[in-house]
Structure formats: structure tokens, C-alpha cells
Image 1 (tube, one colour):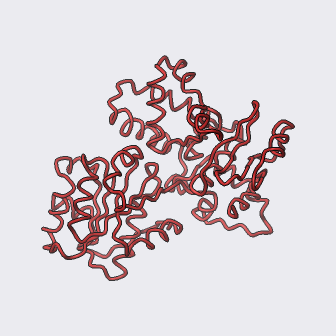
Image 2 (tube, one colour):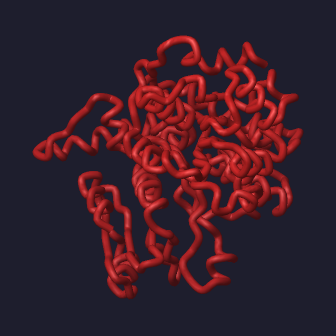
Length: 390
């Protein structure tokens, strides 16, 4: 194990610099803010969204601040060579290698933490008994959700999302002056094709996105949940992408694929737990929220484009607005008398997305008459900045 730990931690033997890495400042600010608190920082989000890169950037900053590099451990817990070792054994080996006393502060960066059985118990044990600052990352929402109870009060969770349009422009070295706002539309259309996964933004490739989706389906869904028919899971995801931005009938998808409603519901939860999709409930009384069909959104527009192509640009724009809003507000969609308005927030802001088009008469009537504290029609890329103010 010792040799493997040295491979993961080159800063133990040489100077360390993250070469050719674009920083995502909005997340680094959050991580720096919590550096001096004892709580475990949990990074979640889609595979390859940049969780590892953020951890490596924080490691570089810690070393630059004067933290002893030999007090910093990074390791990816899905490594086959570590499959026999639990987290505590790995940490003990790290302390042994550098003769670090138990009272000396160490910084632990544990990637893909949910690969270890009882990870939550081990993290709690380390948190309670050792002088550590723990950073952990996982691409599985359900594993974290199911196990987080024992970490209540001990952990802060930060979801890392694909790059938004502004970050996409920054990664591409594009700066748009206020007088050139009309250029946003053409850049947004390019962004729809590429999406917001950092590596793919820097080197766009359909193959990269295909491999990512296959990777998630194989490793995080079919292998993890012991599903024998891989193809049916792939077909299920294709149907989800074709319906993104629409209300989703679990039963209808089940019928198309010849699976039971329960199996269809289970598969949907697997895709949600790997951050490939998000689900939006309907606004209304509790039973309406629970029982009505949910709307589905892709977590990355590039992945959506892989399945949808150039069809229905309005659905890309709506999907993007959802991604901008989802961590800012508790969101629902509004559906009354066969008419739908895209978003209604818990603090009663009504928002309709229109990609350079207008509301139809039924929507306009519902939009104007429905009681709300604020009403917004976002009908162009240039108007997206309004969302910063809500």
C-alpha cells in the first residue's frame, strides 16, 4: 500500500502544481470558507464534473500556505488495489509512513468514498477521535443520503454542477462586453452542444460524453444494483433524454420497455441518484406534489444534445434555467386546466421560459391571473441575468 500512496501523493517528494487547470472560483470560495471548521466537507455531483480537480486545487493552496505536504493524503477509494483495506487502515498506514502522531493535524482527501462499506461509520470514527480535516467526494447521491444520518452535524455537503454559460465562456477564454450582448445567443447554442463538463469543454468530443454515460450505467447502476440486462437500462436513459423538459409517465416508459411500473420507478431513481437527471414536482397540495407526474431535466446539456440533437431549442433553454435555479430556490412546475407554466418557487415567484418566442394565449391567461409575488418571462439568453436578482 505504501508505494500506491506515494503514487497518489506526488507532493510528498516534489513540488506540486496543478498544470493547465482552470479554477472554478465559486466552489473554491466555499471550500476555503470551511477550511478552518472541523466539519467534513462532502463534494457530490455527476462523474467527471470536477470534484477531484477541486480537491487537488485545495491541496495546492494548503501547501502554498505552509502546511506540511506529508500531512496531506489524497486517495481514490475505488482503486482495485485498495479493495481489501478499509478507510481507517488506509489512514493508519499514511500516519505510519510519515510517523505522524495522532494529535498532529492531517488533511484527508478521500475520493469515491461510497465505494467503501460502512464509510459513514469510519468517517464518524476518524472525525471524533483524530485531529483531521476531511474532504470526501462521491458520485452517488443515494448512498450518501442513505448513510448521512450518522454524520449529522459533522458534515457540510456541496454539490458540484457542470459549468454554467459564464464558466463555459471563461474556460474558452471568451469575454463579452455589455455592448455585445447579442453574441450570447450563438455562444449559448454552442454550449448546448458541448455541455458543461470541464474536460469536454476544453476538448469537445461526442465519444467522451458517450463513454461517460456508459461508465455511469455500467459501474454505478447495472453493476452496483446487479442488473443483468444492460441494454434495457441504456434504452431507459434514451427515453428519459427524449422526454427531458416534459412531464414523465413512469408507467408509459415501463410499457414501452416491457418492465413493471415498480422496476421503471426503481430505474428512474438510479439515474437521479447518479446526477444524470433531476426531477421537478408539481406545485399544489401535498398529494398533488407527491402523486402528480414529475418533470425531468438533464443535468448536462451536452448529454441531452447527444440524444436530442438540434430539436426543440426551447427545451434546452428551459433546462438551463432549471439548472441555474435549482440550488437557489425550492422549485415546482405549475399545471392548471391543461396549461403549464415552467417554474413556481416556494416564495411564490412565477417564471416562464421562452426561447425568443411568446406565451401562447392559454399560458398568458394563467400567467397573468395566477397569484404570485413576482412574475418573470425569460425570453432570451440576454435576459438570464435577471435570475441573479431573485
